[in-house]
Amino acid sequence: AQKITQTQPGMFVQEKEAVTLDCTYDTSDPSYGLFWYKQPSSGEMIFLIYQGSYDQQNATEGRYSLNFQKARKSANLVISASQLGDSAMYFCAMREGAGGTSYGKLTFGQGTILTVHP
Amino acid sequence: DGGITQSPKYLFRKEGQNVTLSCEQNLNHDAMYWYRQDPGQGLRLIYYSQIVNDFQKGDIAEGYSVSREKKESFPLTVTSAQKNPTAFYLCASSYFVGRGSETQYFGPGTRLLVL
Image 1 (cartoon, helix red, strand yellow):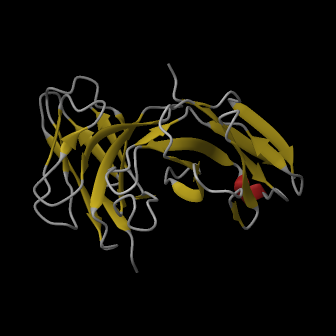
Image 2 (image 1 turned 135 degrees about the vertical axis):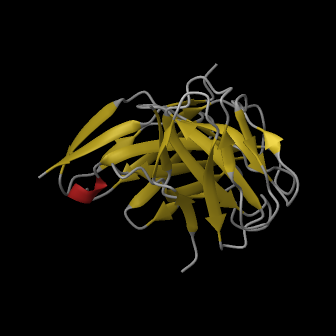
């Protein structure tokens, strides 16, 4: 079974509009972390945002926010005011295991290609 | 500047040849990781290391080998036993989970092609 599911192979958004990229996850571990990475055409993975399973509030980093719905096991990425430079592949990833003992293995989704139109 | 470097950017392998991909970090991170990415796919873990002189297999370790003789370095060897090595290889590093930020930071990657 897929642990991380990204159901949108591709998304299109107009410049300056907001866009939501979906991510659902599957785990029975009470302690986990959720990450979003951006991969432009150059290939490098750029860390965007992190949400811990015990965090009470949704994470935000500049134009990025994570809509964390624990009961639904979803961790959608919201990009506000899209820019042309946001065009890239976006990956959702999950770390399972208790803090302090885990080596931090990440399981990645298949990714969503975001295209921002001028 | 602190960061993770990978070399070479492109690597060509002949049939039956072993090749080694370099990964160096100066972030003082404890753990290092190697991932493989196939076109249009997510990343899959090959090997990881939490401390010097120790490493563990990930999900797709067959045909690969690693060493961790220094904290800063985690080279990956793609052996001739790896029958389909053409892929994009990414190295990452992080602190231990629980030591503050657990975020994994990635290097720029190495593209391996088989001639």
